[in-house]
Length: 351
Image 1 (cartoon, one colour):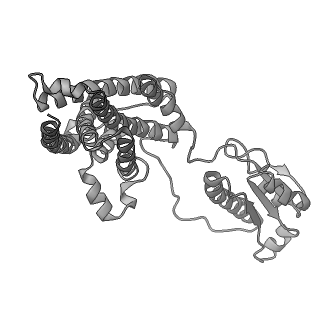
Image 2 (image 1 turned 60 degrees about the vertical axis):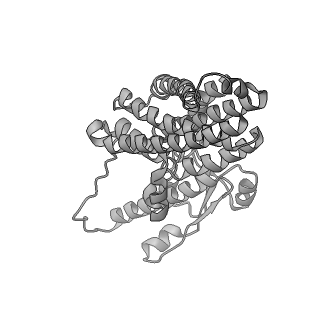
């Protein structure tokens, strides 16, 4: 378990932040230039690192073998007389062949290439014939993450996901192991109440997870990945402590209901996947159906993600995120109370 904690808050964070970037990076591309014109050369020169590798100029016969072997992800086929037809007012087509096995790069890269070819053709035509300038120019500015670096978002979300996962697993697994080994019966004959047993497990396991998350934010997120966390670290950790309180209570509930470690593992999968996928850490909540958004408001992960994004990316203070603190405290209190009632009944049965 110590190895698991060390991995998920160190190497696991780095891998999750960097292994699948949403932006295109170093994609292999080839061009079949059947036109051999200044325009086709201009289009070929538009592709350069870091988004694409330097284009390979290949023949038509090399197109299919290159895609079949995975040598190229994209092959752009510029037909003969492309420039002449364009200047004559016709609408010639350019064929883009994509290896769709490279799922993330295929989807993003197709849009990149379409935009780049369109821009080069438009620029070439403006030089050839006069055109009216657009009356409005669109200036794009990205807030909070100017370079649109995926690792900045992915690392923080992965830390929150790992906090929730370990909070549930540590408390639930510890309770099941004690029941399997008979040590829970020793606790029942001692002058301690179910409330004290639950509280001891929550604060001990929660403290381990909170310390690991703090070290991960400082050394991995800020240090190794270089993420400029703009907001207050103590403010986020206070919210994380409330999230851990709710998650550990849920873990004890699941550990009480499950009769074996195998049953507990299945329950963890069924609970963790919705918490991580539907809480806004992977997919934006605004893109989900409203009923899903409303249901997920009872999940602590939804509120801790909203809090983390506001604090770390927008430098929000307590005056902005107090609704999330209130929601986390309420959800944690309900989880703790419901789990305590069930835990007391289970302890009486075991006694």
